[in-house]
Image 1: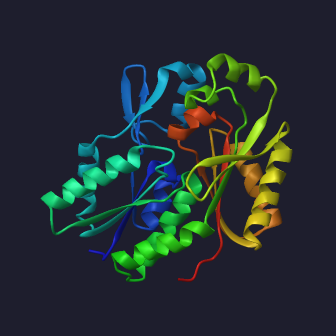
Image 2: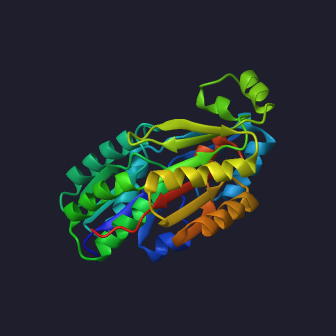
Length: 289
């Protein structure tokens, strides 16, 4: 049994192979609801199938949060691997899941006092969350105790960034920020917004473009400005658009010394409002804590 076990959400854009290689437990960030069927994210329904449902009839597609008992079950399962568990959750500014996880962890620890579960607000999502989880797993594997692992997460978080480009605004009405009619009208203008995740865990629009290729270049230019280094770890997630993901990866290889570069699928839990074709890039320099 290891000293500390790392958990994160399906939002983190980690493949099962990567999670297994780093001994990271992945739990559903939410349940997908389509018609009268319920699927835990990443279980029983592939990302490609979920995006097919979104394309077919987005109004039948929705999500619902996990219950405290769901979290309790996952903590119980993780406790078989370690009595010290760090659950790295996605930004509390983007979802209420973090608060539910905290409540469930407190109740679980009361009932199981020999287990310590710490739920950490990553203040990020998707690929940067995946990079943070890998960083935390490396700290745990080095023999750090739970406080040391949490300290590494807190120090790595400001150095780990994320930027995304939407391919369409057709689905943005799902966020509640725009009516469905307005979203469809705006999508006809072919505007592709580029957003970053801020330090407080919220999204901010930083660029917009009409041409996808120009958007890729803007993403690269932004990362260069923000990091000031050419050597970075990357995770690229795509919303049912592997060719777009491959093109983004190709340009990253051309413009950076990629310490690591993985391409994965963007969780439909967030993709149902971002829309198919979205691209999310997480980046992180080499860290030595």
